Image (tube, rainbow, N blue to C red):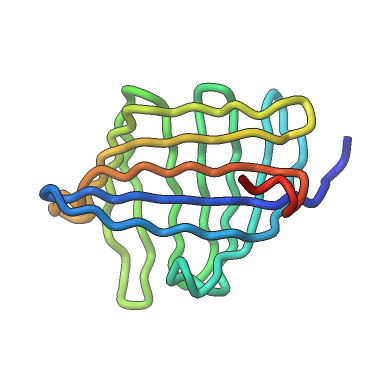
Length: 146
């Protein structure tokens, strides 16, 4: 199977000091088999605050890596129980980030449809940003949105 078009429902929740904020994005993307997993890509929109950036996700059953190219660049790796240290690029300079993943789940079927779920504690610089919960639903088309 080669690259195919998919529809994505990306929802994120960030909890910090008891307060939570939610963002939900519906967008088109592309998926292609990649080794024993999948390579998923999509263009960020103004809803995410990173319009023009491209996000590429490599997803295996127990490991997910995310690379964002553009003005707000980042590379992150998620493996449950394994901290990750990386950097976050902004127009104002580079910031160090740390991830502490507690949930890393990739449940995509043989067609590349299904869900990726990540839950992790995030630190940027020396500041604890909070706990993030990200769900990416990969669907065949817009009609499958629930």
